[in-house]
Length: 374
Image (cartoon, rainbow, N blue to C red; front, side, top):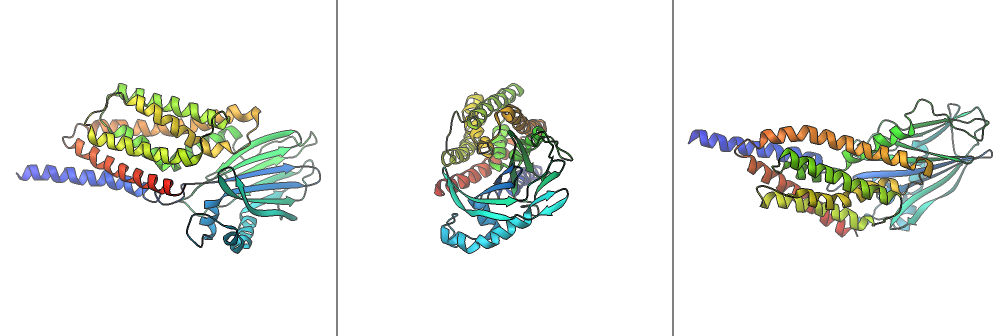
């Protein structure tokens, strides 16, 4: 009897440990803004340097606590109350250097809220001095650098002459450089990662910060399956989300976030509930493929508003998707061997049910939160 009680106790402790491991990374994501995205366009001409910067409405609220009525939206009166603070914060954190010397903007053309499709964004348009040939221009974004909980990326587009290039500034890579030459502002990047690699890193950080995507993947993997089932399921998910990611960024399909985001939360609930009600799963690749189509649209949100030049679109898309796949392969490679060991344990079923119950609860919280914000 003592041995039996000890085994039950170990089972309970193991379940609680796994539940805790799930809850702590994801608990804040159920309530916090999971991903913040800034979009910057630098237009370089011989007479001036123009910067257009936009930031999603919820990020503005997080930065300044300007949502007086707590409805997760900024009306004009609320924005007017924090407008000066926002201008100061942007001036302090968005830095433009010319030949290593910081340059303040010479004029603010506009700073306000603009409706862009289904979302409201803060948009700043500022003018800086021009950059002459042989000079180096540097752009640095330090927003959120002291906030480890926020996954922030600035998708930078540079227009110089007839040319256009893109860069994704995220994580510790927040600096972009360009040397202006006589040949129509031809660019030469120095001391920064190449554009394609920045999108690879962006894809990796995007899925690491996408707690809902990670929880969905975990819910898929924890159910007892054969290696063939795992391989088929992951392949189906990869193909599905790659297709809709590409089609969404290309503008061929356009499903609004108000549909996609609740559907992603619903996918977690469904898979978690399926784990609870069925001791063994079969043909899960079909379900995974269908939900993968939805998750691909979610992956695309960060890129579809960026005006990526056609000449760079294929490389940036492939790099971004490879970043997602890199993280996915790492997760699968680490988890599957551990799960195989776990499923040999006689109380493995209890662990699956306990973990899936946590996933179901978190998915339901996200679903209710996202539906209520529509």
